[in-house]
Length: 212
Image (cartoon, rainbow, N blue to C red; front, side, top):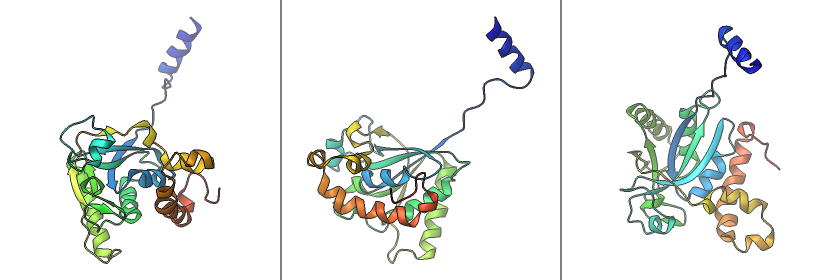
């Protein structure tokens, strides 16, 4: 009875259950998802960064299938963010600087269409914004070669297997013995230098300060 009275009072006084923050999502691909996930997940305003696959003809694909390069999927990161804390436009600008968008169907040592540079859009407004940012980056000549990033409608997104999630964070906190069972060479040689540089450049925008 008491709880019912409290609820009625809250409703009459304009209170009630507070609304949940309205989060948005951005799905992008730029090489191995371990690397992009590790960086985006540390940004203020990003609620979560999830590794997955998108763009192919069917949902429910596996890592082994995507690795063949025949499914049409790209390795992607699905970024959930609070638009009041960080804008989609800023996340897109960052995306175009965190990987090399001039490499066609590859990113460093990883090659094949599953590693293509791509922005997936859910509607025409998201597509226009991605075009705007892509053109802005191209005009600024941040990269010496033409940008080859594709803009594709979002379809058949599939969350990657659990062992892919937070892979680099797991690597950083793993013991030497545990690292032997991981792709330690790739993490140390490819991902770690990028993440270190990202933390240095964007320290003011991180949830936790660099130099942990």
